[in-house]
Image 1 (cartoon, helix red, strand yellow):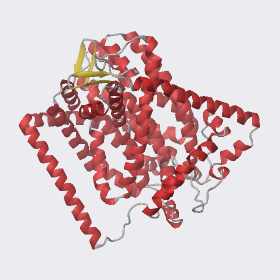
Image 2 (cartoon, one colour; image 1 turned 90 degrees about the vertical axis):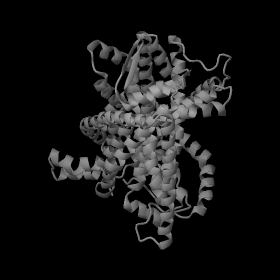
Image 3 (cartoon, rainbow, N blue to C red; image 1 turned 60 degrees about the vertical axis):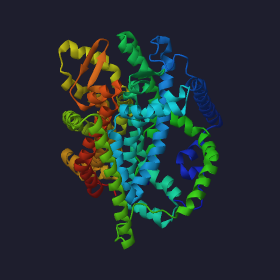
Image 4 (cartoon, rainbow, N blue to C red; image 1 turned 120 degrees about the vertical axis):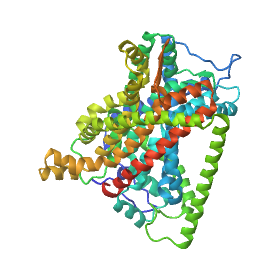
Length: 596
């Protein structure tokens, strides 16, 4: 069974042709389909009802005392706080997905823009969440004056900055490593760019993109405290949410409240896994590139109920006019182009490349000169040198963390991704571990560090790993799950030994996914340093030497110049490592280890 099917351009296949499960659902008894329709309708109504209940509080006016600086730790408020946090998380995920489709497509399809967008993505993932907050909180407050919506928008934007980058990296890599025969088929059928995007680009990227969506939600949970209890410029803005609840409970040394928040968080993560991630991963199996159907198929009760209902026909009917509209609007852009051509460029194209490069370099030089003038005037280059020394300390932590996490999680992720039975059992466990905001446990870890006299300079590596190791695991799982069953059966037919199987199939197949996971894990570790190099519980505060603590202290005190210096140094380190180490590995993965 092949992964993709190309239909005659202009023809619209029937439901059973698009999805074999639809034809199977048509044979279900009427009572079963009716019950499924009732359950799906009840779920949709419940979802919209919860959103309607939450929305009025989001846009309520700011009281005479201004934005609250703390929240209640009453346990009765926990369910409502959890709903508010989940709402912010998935609003941010929606915008992250839109950003991924637009940014990733531009970076993969436009040769000139890729020279700017890929390095820019390196810089964006290196800017810590506090850097974005300190630069944008005032803007959001001005856009929504006198309303809590401004602070809500700032919080959602902060969560967005912890989700979008790894999704964009994953989607860009999928676009640049599409199988050659499918690319040629799309060209032969002369699909419009809109048709190609939904017929080839998105399906080909679906499995890694889905796992990175799960990882993005996990990353959003990790930074939930910083995005709901916003402390910038000597001000604290507290929003109702489970992250701010934990931050307030830690300040009050209320361990019981923190424990109940952890229990609530585990329940929320499990519920999201059952209702969303497990159905999506089972559904995404149809996008695997393989000539034979998997012997053990992923299943989901929720997905089965949805397939037995009429919701897919209703959604197709509702969105068909939108699909037709965008197809019509994009037809003037021409037929599909795929990746840029490798043939010799014309003189005009070379001249445009030179002009484009000069303009980009001039803009970068101008920005660098202005930055150096600001630093020289307000802080001095001695401060910049100190930040570079602290950046080197944090870099050593990040390098050690990435190495250790790769050794541990690459074999584990490959085994989970290649075995559907293991994946079915391990996915909720991995999802809970990855989505659970490990900084909720920081108060307990702080007490442990104090009691056992653990040096925070070493302990911060553990804290950083709790939030960033999952980028490697999730990408490796996604890469391993994409290995065609034909190749697995071939290794068994040739009776390859375990080491030969790993050397000749598994490690080459997951190499590109590991590189993507390593890039995002390293960037996430730099970001995590701002909450891992300085931790507190009540009257206890532990501070490690490093760039993360430097930025956190500068942001909280409102020292804008030191914040700019810290963010700049962090960006330089991340971009330099990506250019010198990760990018050559990524090119090697595309050249030698692509499943074409």
